[in-house]
Figure 1 (cartoon, one colour):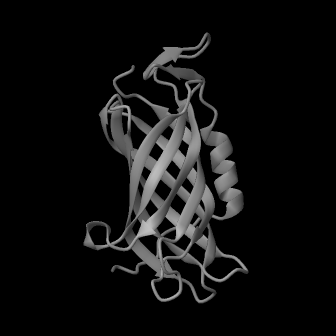
Figure 2 (cartoon, rainbow, N blue to C red):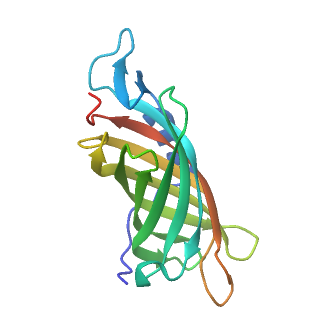
Amino acid sequence: MNFKRVGTIGATGAVALAVLLLAGSHVWAQGRATNVPGAGKGQAVPVSGTIYGAFDYTFEGKGAWVGYALISIGDAPPRAASFADRNTSFGMTKNGAIYGTETISLRFLDGSGTFDVVARFDGIPNNTPNLYTLHEVGTIANGTGEYAGASGQFVVTGPFLFPDPTSTPGAPPWIAEIHGVISGGQGE
C-alpha cells in the first residue's frame, strides 16, 4: 500500500464545501435535467442521500466497503444504487486519525447508469474503540448511461468502524450522508 500524505479537510471545511455545493438550480426529473425559471443550461443539480454498507474483507481479493445508497437528484424520488468503495491510498497520524484516497463506484439498480466518486478522506477517531467519523470530498468521474459525461462534487460524512479482522470481526458497518451537485450527463 502507498502511505503518502494527501490533503485533509476538517469538519468546518467539509460543512462549508457542502453549503457551496448545494447551490444548484435545476431539477432532475425522470433522469433528465429540466431548466428551472431563471436557471441556465449546464447548472448543477443538488444531490443528497444515504450510503450504507459494511467492509467485506474478501471483496476482489483486497477488501472494500460494499453496500447500497439511496440517492435523490433534484426533486426526484430517491433511486437505489449498489456501491463498492475501493481504497487507493491510506495513512495514519500519530494521534490515530486516518487519511487517504478512494473511489466509490455507484451502480443504479434501475439500470439508468453508473458513476464513480473519486475522493480524498479523513477519519477522526472517537472515544469508542475503532469508531471513526468520516469527512470525504470527491468528484464525479466515469459516468455511463444517463450519467455519461456528468460532472459534479460530493461531500460524504458519517460514522464507521475501522476494519481490522483482529478487533472488528464480521463486517464492520458504515453509514453516511452524501451531498453534492451533478451536472451534464445525457439528460442535458
